[in-house]
Length: 248
Image (cartoon, rainbow, N blue to C red; front, side):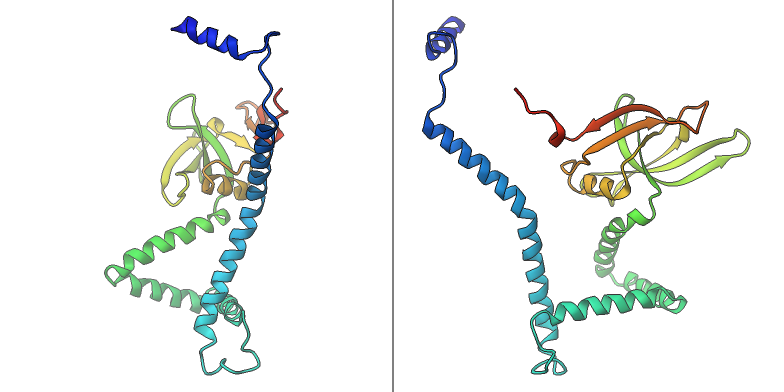
């Protein structure tokens, strides 16, 4: 059977041993498919952003414009609901930045925490929002061998512990799950065992939320030598797939 398949393949080739060229129709079809996909991938982020913006404007207008203070007034125009919402968030942000605002926010959390069912929804939502603002609490992005030797995982340094007796520093590293960084693992790792990278927290969060699809164009790894902490030992520099040379 193998001989018959090989003979069949040889029969499909031309006399000089080369594969037959695709027909004009096949080439046109492939060209249209590739260009259509490229256009789709380029426009999808803008279209999604536009749809989300339209959805927010419609929903906020539906809440604000029917109010007597807004209806049939000079400031009754499409988009007023979104403007009012942004202004409200800004005012709340100013309020919670004061000691009194922090106390009121704490009372609000305690009150909702006493309500059955609602407290579960509130807790999950609070975790998700915390993950979005975690970039302000993570000090840097590192890589470490996890969950086994020979495999590295990305993590965020959330704190450090120092031993005056041994003069060694241990890092507290949070290893997020993908694509939901609200759950993950925590590891205590000696600073000397961490692999440093030039990736910032913003790019790392994009990498987590996209499941590895959104990669930085260039990513460098380096390890801090135990003898000299002032110089990085470069162990690798990788480029994203978009930087690969075209295949022959």
